[in-house]
Image (cartoon, rainbow over all chains, first blue to last red):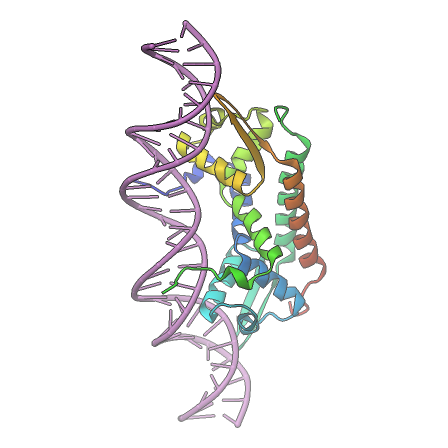
Length: 112
Length: 112
DNA sequence: AATATTCATCGTAATTTTACGATGAATATG
DNA sequence: CATATTCATCGTAAAATTACGATGAATATT
């Protein structure tokens, strides 16, 4: 009965893109992971696992989500791995978020 | 077996707050609703329903989520209703998002 | 070659999210 | 008072998310 299916096609590209960035940031573990990536200057999944109350496989899944959203880059190279902020994509997300915030702040409704 | 339960207590207040704001913005319908609120200068649920491929009850649920996140205010007054941006809370969300983006952009990892 | 390290993937399960129609409550209109 | 309008809520169902342990693949170390 097509329930729970969001009718993606009816929204603008911009709305979908923005929602996707927000979705990537919508779990505290992923916010924590991003902060750890810069604080520890270490990009190893195992290091992140040590700092979070989550299993390795769960952290791996969160990392993959951040990667799929384009917010981080990650290249596995045998036993050594590197996950870090994708600066270009990160700036894009930042500008799109900023745009929404600005628009909604400057064009306020008059009714309340 | 406590599966699917996120161990909220292990994250900082800031991480949880930020994730909650992001969660509120993580669906294109809710982004679209926010844009409609300013574009149409109308705060009526019914007006929003007309513009989206969603039923009235579903739009109502999205509005409630935005309200619970604090991003919009809404007061029902009989048949007339008013939903609009909560400026104060909106600024708070904006500053917290901005902080994350800035931090991660300025303190980049060295490894890649 | 055997072992250790590191991360992804698979299978599984619980919870949350998304969505709809039907109904209800509250106010306004005739 | 009867009817219309407007939004929330309830019940239900499907899909997505979150999480874990176990296993696998790939490289490094001994």
